[in-house]
Image 1 (cartoon, rainbow over the protein chains, first blue to last red):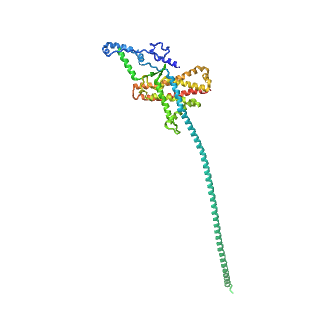
Image 2: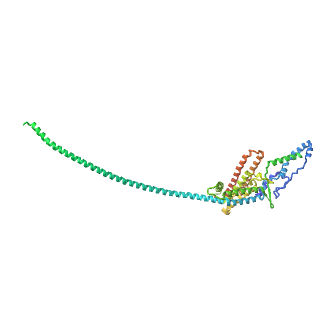
Image 3: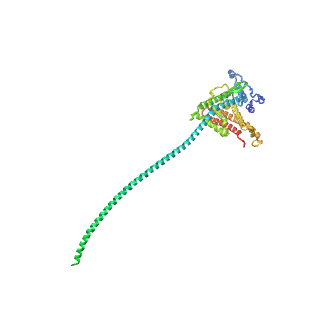
Length: 219
Length: 247
């Protein structure tokens, strides 16, 4: 493939083809290029030239400049954009070495570390779920204790209520008895008084009836 | 004659001034082979940056990550995500390849845009991003090709070559052609983008040295990141494609 690309690089120097017409078929891709020879002219020579010769020379220069760029480029340097050499395998080897080194330094240890941390976090999360069950149990226990306490309290309350009720009833009964006794006493008194008054009334009635009889029946 | 000489000299001066050095290399001779020195130097710097920062950040991992560790964890998760989306569930073994591909290209591209390479004068050529040399991009693209062939062959054995006549044998030439176009497009896309970006910046700087090149530079940073992501994603996609069963 490198050869095909190399062959495609040839049209990059089309203007050079007139110097080395068979360069595309030559085995070496590097072509020796003609150097542009610049004649040395001193300043005194420059000043001695007349304007007319300058004019004619400028025309010559204009035409020859069109031919100048390739040789100019050749003088500066040939541009080798698609220049394949030993750099390619060296870079490939460097890449492979870098890959192994980075794997040893970076990918494997850090990846392992991250995976382990992920696993640890997941485990912790799961254990947190377990403690939530524990919390539920504890809550249930607390609820049971509360229930027991409530039952105890209500039992005690009931007992107290019964006691107080009994006491109250006792007192009530006592009070009732007392009241009844008093009532009966009062009733007995009343009865006695009634009898007494009736007795006294009887004697008075007898006297009165005697008087009535004496007055009505004139004897 | 002297007018010609003068104009040529002015042209040469202008050429030197603009400082556009395309395709000029700082050659080193190794045996009978030549090597592009500037590419190797910058690639060493890039590798040093990657290894150094990784060592510093991951040396002593904390359960609650520090800032640098956090950044590297983010990058690793990003790489894993890219590999997982493109390759599927069996992405694990390919994380180093995809990750190194992304990080190397990304740091290379950004080093070309951010590091002041021009301060260091070379006798020939100039320092720039390693990825603006065709050798680097072709090397990476060929490694990708090798990687996806290896992935397919190790997963399915010789049955891997059955994919060339899928879905019909008529497509055989196109399927074979694909194996050549994949590395070609990968390498030329990266090479062209990075080189063009650096050229645009250099030309704009030579024309208008102030303010105007700045948006182009930011665009360059953006393009560099995108190119690194595209290269890594496509490499992962090719690997995933050769590993998946053809149903």
